[in-house]
Structures are given as structure tokens and as C-alpha cells.
Image 1 (cartoon, rainbow, N blue to C red):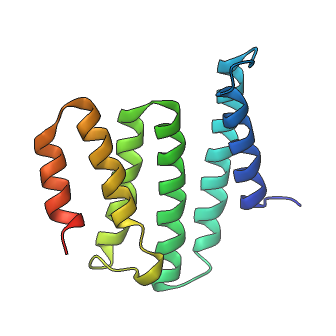
Image 2: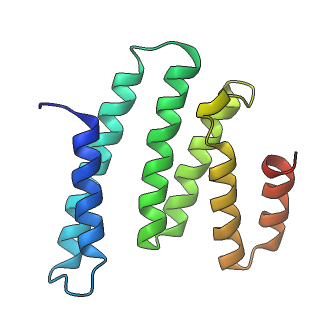
Length: 135
């Protein structure tokens, strides 16, 4: 299966999960390999999204950004995670803040709040909550 985004995603996650285990011998290499597969997944999934129109295309792009953000979040690279969470929120805002059931804006905002709270940025938590999480 050449150029299958799901396969790239699965392999990347497997490498990252292995790197997080206690017995991992070469953690940095495993992380590098995992992120290589994940960024290939992102590239393929965004390219695949161009075959669709409107919210379907945007939903796929947003999911790709969100998954990269989650990988960085899992690794403890919070600055990079925040960048990709904000990119995912930006995709939603391109469509007037609504991708329907595909919209990951609230999930991104929740995770951003967690990262802001960990860094002690309570103003960021409040602003993000008021902008994206309050109904």
C-alpha cells in the first residue's frame, strides 16, 4: 500500500509509544522515526483532502494538524503542540468557526488550556476558555 496516510499514522504512533516505554534503548531514534512517519502522514492526508470540497477538506486538514499536536503533547514538547493546536483551530476559523461534527476546535482548546495551566499562564486559560469553550 503505497502512500497510505493511515498506515503512516499507525506506524508513527507505534514508534512513539515504543519510545515512551521504560525499556526503550534508543529513545531519540525512535522518536525521530515516529515523527518522520507522522509528518509523512500529515503530508499525505492534507494532499488527500484536496480531492474534497468545503468542510470535508477542512475537517481532514484539521484532523492532521490535531494529530501532530497530540504527538508533540505526548512527548512533552508543549511549545510545538501549541503551534499545531492553534493551526487546527485556525482551520475551523477559516470556515466561520464551524465544521459541524468534524470540528475539533473544542478538543484543541481544551488541550491548549491544559498546556497553559501547566505553564502557569492562567490568563491564557481564561482567554481560551471564554473564546472556544463557553457555550
